[in-house]
Image (tube, rainbow, N blue to C red; front, side, top):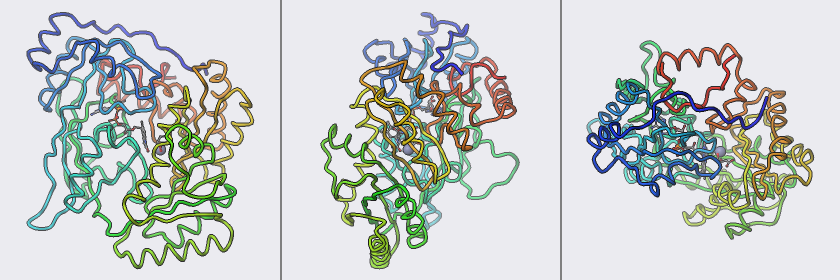
Length: 479
Ligand code: FAD
Ligand code: 2HG
Ligand code: ZN
């Protein structure tokens, strides 16, 4: 397995002046060729991959997306769909001169359902709605979005669906594969697939929308989403705790599930290195005594007195048994936000620390931190920092390695070591970020040849010319 394979440009057409006049007629003022405006759309959030697209299209409607794709398919022009461009695997930017199709102007809420006077909590919106705006919209109506992530201020719901984003609430509300009730998707040839159902239950044939959830823009462009929103909890508490060993942290999780189960909405962790980074680069303050490991627990329930009593009993138990060394609890919004930002902003702190190598793995819970310890030992002083954090409740570790600048020798020491390690424990080499450009050739560490061949067949059926997000998700050589 060679790492960091740079693909060769496939024989797509190049954009001509005739193409530009077509786009200008279809999207006047929304066909962007200005190099300064294209710059930020060509570079990913991590600033590690860069394309050289010369055209950015900003449709407002499904019909416009349909016309764009029908035209591009006919002309054999490659297209890279883009939402908030917060993806972490190099999937959201062109590799060469692919046209960038942005959902930034597709940001309308279509309906928020009420049947007579009863709100069902089903939100239907265009794909380019920013997650945080949707959160505000539904919260004003006493609901919340079933997902939450650190990128909420920029990421689009269509991007979330296309990456099957996990995030901080998955433990409680499940994955988008359960909460997304319907999708509208434009296929590569411009056909509009209307699967925008708003039903909780619907077993009429194959569930087509599932194919597009997590398909990273390679099978179609998501233009609208129906999603089931939970009621807004009346009482929210956050506890920030310190543990002296990872074993203690895992035991704390066990007890937490037992004592707080029905109100638990998040169980996240970070190690001491993450804490140092957010202190150093973001000037955040550690609210408790220094510890090797920190936990963020959130409860969300309907009765503040009951929830607080439960949380109190739990905290008493874990401190009395010395599983937890120190901790603090927040009930008011400002403090809750401050505690959460320590966890949510680690990705941002890492970007300040240097060039970042990111690994997003699922592992058996009891092995989850061994990978970090092992990697630290394995890399010695080759790395600047090796840190671990993530979604304990979901068995999902974020292992990040930083170095002062891009370092091929360091990369060769990390990969495929990290993938072999994950494979050995039957884990996933991409738990929630997808494969994009960076991880596509490692798919065989988590999927069988038979499964990958079937993926290739689906791709060939839905996008025979391969114009949608080429060089992404599927490996270069399908065996
Ligand atoms: P983009 O980055 O623009 O695109 C991502 C992929 O989806 C690309 O392949 C793109 O082609 C495709 N795509 C985008 N929109 C469409 C569309 N409408 N139709 C078809 N394909 C489309 N991820 C998690 O899972 N959990 C986290 O907790 C999390 N936290 C993050 C925190 C930070 C600070 C950052 C920077 C990223 C985080 N991410 C997380 C990764 C990223 O935010 C998510 O993957 C997010 O869902 C991407 O949404 P986006 O709109 O930015 O998509
Ligand atoms: C998170 O959980 C995100 O904070 C980002 O998934 C993880 O940057 C990362 O490695
Ligand atoms: Zn994550």
